Length: 444
Image 1 (cartoon, rainbow, N blue to C red):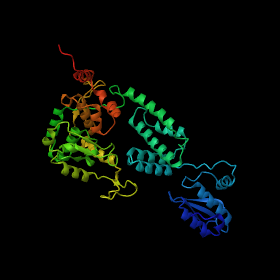
Image 2: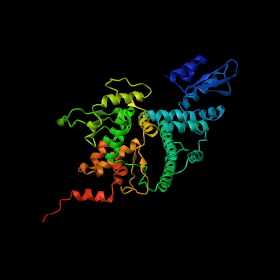
Image 3: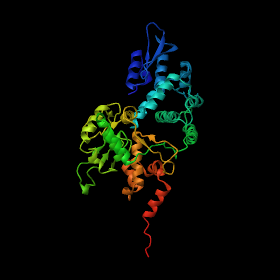
Image 4: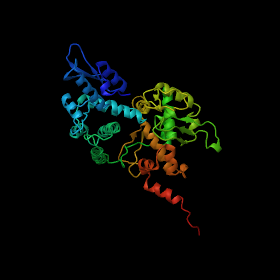
């Protein structure tokens, strides 16, 4: 409970009241200095409040006490302390404007990322460290120049915009209003410019997707059978991704259904993928693209063993759903826990395929879904296998009857996302076949 100013009669009273109020700033005094000092508990930095005397000067100490309570958890203003005290005690004066500092911006943004259940993106962390190192002025012109250090059409340019978006959200959530130097409208303008430049630079790309190689069933089987035995775990991972359309990190979190229970909608060989407390998607079930692969590549028989080995290779970081700064206690029925390092989990297989495994290639479809003969086959990444599942569901005759809605649910995203990112690859001929095949033509 805050004490009335009249009851603060000595130095220890002031200090104890600030402790009770759990203020960000604490007053200090040193025998070697005549001036009052402040320590920032967040950054551990100390700074002088000269010319405010620290000794035998209770009236001014009480004024500083009020100033600390007024500023609260915000960054300390870059304004002379006497001016701050004047503003504080003059009702007609302007409101005290709290200045930003990059160290505080970094702390708030990282905490925001944790609270949003997304974990800390490596790119966001890198960009925050870069901004802290550069100590840029808090103006949009300075921020804009920093973004343009990267080429307009590049992924790095987009990553910096994504980092700025997270910074804006963090500061807006903390202080109530978006910063004048980092407005959503300005970030959006740069996004539009990036999209236009990106499209011009990617002739063979439809909408905003990367060029992807799409392997056939035969190409995948040949590749998997030819893999060296030392890549047993990687072989299982690749087969799982291609057969179930998973995101990389979902291999850590999914579970295999090993017994069919029709009345409960459970079928042997299908997968359960948990929702956003563990993965990037909502809770869903998915089925195998190739039923024969379950036995062919021992996907079910090796499931528990391979998943455990995968979790050992790269460990999940699961924190409490109620307090992201605390580790999750497994078995607590009131706390499912949140995984905050899914990007790290997913990057493991990406690096293995890129740096250690022999390359896997696939042909590149053009914007109509037809093989682009002028482009050489592209080296396939793990995420391309997810695209392969979606495209086969849309075009393979064996998948006739599976709607966009069904496929989207099985991949853990919305129908709009599904159509935007995957259906565009369906060729004009294939689209016509799908449409015409369901029409009950009249018979003579």
